[in-house]
Length: 247
Image (cartoon, rainbow, N blue to C red; front, top):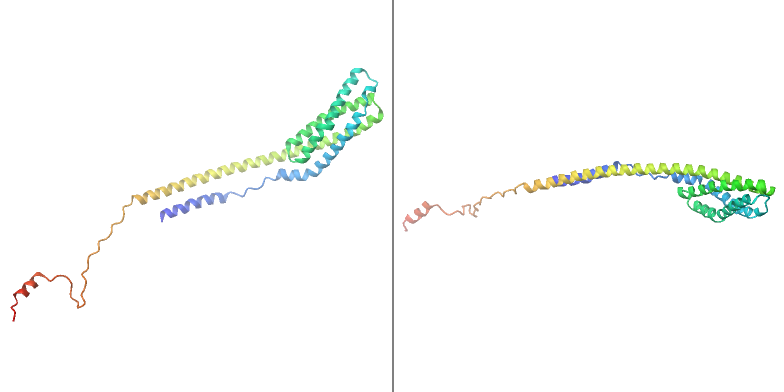
């Protein structure tokens, strides 16, 4: 009975410890944040994609070689224009697609935001050079595109900040849950080890006890049908029988 009680105790302690642990709540704060901002992100990505397509055409139509500027200024402007065109037609579209495919990916959003920042600085320079040396209509078109890029860049930065904060909160929650799980596991292992120890002690105690001795059962003389005992007659009875004379 003691052994059975310890076995029941073993399972009872483990079940109690795990029952006390609250059900793991899904760390969905980052998911909710990403879902709530997915609409605005998608709109910004559409604007950025349109910007890339239109700006690439406008950059290619500048004809910097015809500007009324010295060779050094035209060379620098052409180098910037070529760099912008490569980014607008190759790098930026790829980053936009990556960010669109994974709106909750901090790495993808950061790469896009970093590229948008770099583009803005160079685009601002080529726009200013166009104002000075290029045509007025081209400058005005580039100014509109620069404003679009600046607006999208600002929105991407704010979205990245929110995404980073929610991801950090999720990471901290997962770490706390992992720590609690480790503590509960350690408690369960300690309780299991203690219960197993008690079971082993109970088994050892049972093995040490001597086997109970069987009580000897005294032979009872069977009673005959006539009520006489089946035990042999006493010795004096046999002598009397022998001494009795025959008729």
